[in-house]
Length: 369
Image (cartoon, rainbow, N blue to C red; front, side, top):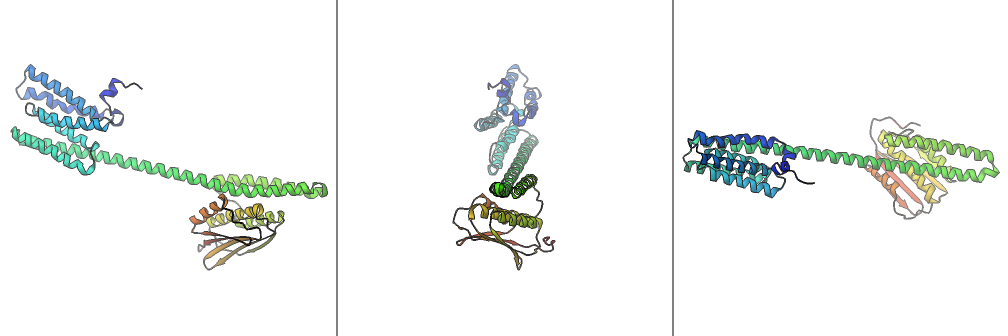
């Protein structure tokens, strides 16, 4: 994109706005000095106008996004203050402009050394030129104040940017966590449900000729299961859970029996928080799905018990119990459990045994029958 004349004159206007140009009003002291000093000659006025215009351009370049250009412009303003002060006392204001630009250009630990150097140079030259001491002190005070004010503004901008960055990071992490939660939940929900639907449709196909009534019943259960799965998916996306651990135990038994796996369940009533119950529900669902899909087992045991202040859920089968790497389901289990201080242990050969442990909370309602 072609750079306009305005952009070249005001290189930093997008960040600082037109406020940068407004402060040039203090150049009036430089332009009016010939009149008040009694040196109002055409030659003096021309020199003042040229130097003032050149200084205004340097000042605007000090707001350039190009750091090198901005530093050179600030140094040039300081040098112009030194060169113009012997014949125009209004050049004292140049030191104020140079001091005000420093916070944007130098690091914090060097800033005040540079400001002290500018003010010391101004004081030394003012004493050499025998300028009124109160004017010099006043200009030094204004230079220090302008630098401190811009330093404060800059620190607030940095703090605002850090806060904005932190907020963006929190929002990003929240989105990532929510996507991971939905991915884990959908994996558990759909994996379990699709496995059950597959088993029931295979069974219905086999029974279609021999026992049409039983096949019809299995297909009705497939319909019910698919409707329940749709409701579960909606609940997972919304972040809510429905039936709880007791209902999941019933579904787990039905799923295993449909797959031809003998089930032995030993379940105790435990004080569980809603978060703990939700995690155990999903862990049981994932474990049963893995047994049906991969174990090739004939027997499965599900135990839910309490030992001291630890809740233990154990799912064991007598299947092939291979050392296959953990999939997304088991990784999702571990992540959910770790949030609540729980652990998951996987033991293979013979069969596979998953042992899930969670610390129990006190004074919460018991798990319903």
